[in-house]
Amino acid sequence: MKKHAKKSDLTHPSKNGYERITPADLKHSGEINKLYMDFIARAKTEREAHDEALLLLEAAGFRNMAAHEKNGTRLRPGDRVYRSCEGKTLMAVTVGKKPLEAGMHIVGGHTDSPRIDLKQNPLYENTGMAMLDTHYYGGIKKYQWVTIPLALHGVFVKPDGKKVKVTIGEDPSDPVFCITDLLPHLAQDQNKKSAAEAIPGEGLDVVAGTIPVNEKDRKEKFKYKVLKILGAKYGITEADFLSAELEIVPAGHPREAGLDRSMVLAYGHDDRVCAYAGLKALLDLKGIPEYTAAVLLCDKEEIGSVGATGMASNFFENTAAELLNLTTSSYSELALKRALSNSWMISADVNALFDPMFPSVYEKRNSALINHGVCVSKYGGARGKSGSSDASAEFMAHIRRIFDRNGVIWQTGELGKVDQGGGGTIAHLMARYGMQVVDCGVGLFSMHAPMELAGKLDIFMSYKGYLAFLKDGRK
Ligand code: MN
Ligand code: MN
Image (cartoon, rainbow, N blue to C red):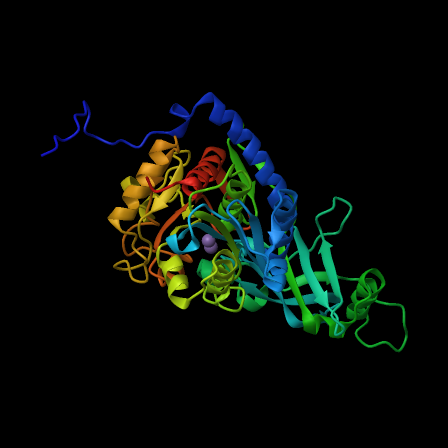
């Protein structure tokens, strides 16, 4: 019988990462955070995140798998490829030494964030104002989105397929948009409502203009003025809103926060922070990994991973099938199933940080703390772990081994008190294949708010942890 390891201290206190981080990692953290801030300044929608990721992948020698699929050229260990879905969802891969049937190491995050979408027929006027009607996307606290500067990002697609990209409100010379709120002097009734009811869903319409056109017989002169401006600048008409995806997001760039510049305040950390950390880890993965290393940047997580670009679709499975077909001479459904069930995955999504302003909703000993490192959540779900893809103790042991061996500062954390809340990620959708999956990502303050707050050390440790996971040889 083996003797138990002797340890002078049997306890495992959670320690602030700044008491443990090496000078080399501290310097590296500064570099990674700067690159991340550059990335999210340009990637404020899932389409933009997809396009920015493609630029980085192409620059690092990743090639479109579609070319291989078309002409049948094989993929060999070390080859770097990607596969795109409708310009929104993306999977990038470095082919490993072992056959795909042995499984992949996958880091999967999402690039859609809560926001306010324009309706299909958005433009109208009322009382001398041109307005844009909206339908919010994802779980937002609506009162947070009024009276702040907003930008319009998106795409119009003409019937001939021509795409017109639109970004208004990001350049300092651009105008911005705004949703109005009631002055306190007239808010007696509003103040009595719950926070959820104070601003109704139909109360999030955006002010688009207030000058009429100077045309005598024109009806709806204020609305027409906006159409004239859009027509002159982008060549679009009112009908083009019918085939468009236009997203209202907070205007402006991410900022360093705190006197010590230890945090990043930005729109869309959830989940571009984990998506970027995963992507950057794959880009920085040197040599040929033992297992095929994959990163998934997916869409529609915030509304349940539905639709063709969400992880409930077959995109991931189809991509794995194409990969198998290009890396083996004996493709079979059984081999595909083995490739999927033998895979290991980090579901890279954000978690909630313990917030001393709201201590009653957290259980402190099992909540993620700022600067205590990347947060691993064995399970999520709500009310009795319902809906959770509870990771096995065996897989948790592998994650411990990988992170501890590679100097990753990490912690565990549960989203809030039992029976208080809980949340979902894409973990359960990947666990369907029988693969090992665990949630692991950056803790946030003010999740789903227009501006979310994250610690730089935690952001860096997610990158470091994902990189260690992608290159791990399971030994
Ligand atoms: Mn998320
Ligand atoms: Mn979310």
